[in-house]
Image (tube, rainbow over all chains, first blue to last red; front, side, top):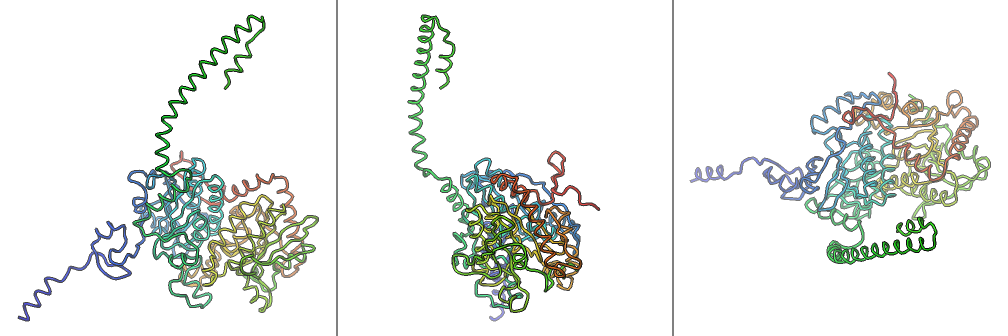
Length: 333
Length: 276
């Protein structure tokens, strides 16, 4: 009897799970995790996602047109630490299939057209070097010129040290880019994803009109380790998390991944201002009616103008005065 | 290691330059929200014959002073004080002079929870929007974002022994070499000296210091700094206010090094020639 029990237990034991949540340690099928937007089906832990995956989740189907994919970093400092900088970049490119730590383009999100910039933490920790700064600048300029909103998904460990002072300067450059967007009146929304720290957090990521974060994301200027080492202060429970930042007034909302698209879409519609989509539809049908009236009015005006021209020409001839200028004036409006 | 002169305990601080260069300095304190941060000093005074706003990091010299000034590491209150002073300068059409001398923004729990990241970002944005002339001078350590927050300027000047870097050599070594002992190697690799930054196009001028460093003759050092600021202001006076903001943006826009092989085969780079 005891033998039977043992066999039964062996048979019913689930196979080693394909995927184990780093947070709750429970298992799941990989397909279920990816279908759940890379959020743990058991505990809701938000995994980091690549820029490509993020674009697929956020942009409407087939709406993303990538821009400037080949802008590449140089090695201005000829920087070598344990490895040469160009080698680190090549490895990151091979690993991620991206040329740099940010993917940019245009898209619609829940029906609203926008310029979209998405950072990839997998590419050298999403660090901001010259290319991230330059592509973000181009996004800002495009948003300003085309009157489109700018949406940026920020996930970064900070400035790219291997570009030295030039990486620090990208904080100022992206801040100036925000100035360009603000001046044009284009809406600007940032989504902060785990982790968003250092130079990105202390520049464009913090300067959006609306600034939201994913649950559990670490958001800070200095990392927890640096704080602990420098100040020897004990870190309070939940330090630097999105939830704590919301409590402290640094965020507009903490939004779970499966709601991001709808929320960003809602923000974009609201920031566009004016009438609600329902009212706009109603007005469009009313306008169609109005267009008919306007057309009739325009036709009438043209007929009257022609009549006036003829009569003034006649009057001109009768008065034996050159009347070329009068009709020209009448035509201008 | 150049960092040693930049961090020298007797190196003149912001207040020293104020006392040498600014007549009738009226210090203005407080962020108008909750506190005054002694790590950033600000106020009005006369530079030559014109009224200016001065804002700078203050480190202090004796241990007591350094403690009061938190070694020049500002908290969000300090950056918010700077912001409200920039607003004041803009309203009254006063040129802005900043002095940069900080190891970095303070990495404490209260500072973080008080919004350190946004305080830095908003200070930069405030500077970017000014239409009055803005001249920043790096006089000691230009440590990362905490330094840059006061240096989004039309002209960035730097004393020859000052340093300006994205991260401290120690911090960089700890991360990239996984051992802070490699700080000298990191300092070399980061190219944080004034002449290196000039070559990278990040600063407009290297200001000469007395032999051995500014601490050997603070008065002479200050005279050189004053001369350089005066020259920079004279140039900026030639520019229309609205144009100054556009040019400042353009100044930061061109900073960086990148290539775009597919864009008609052209390679774009802000740095014309880095040399061998």
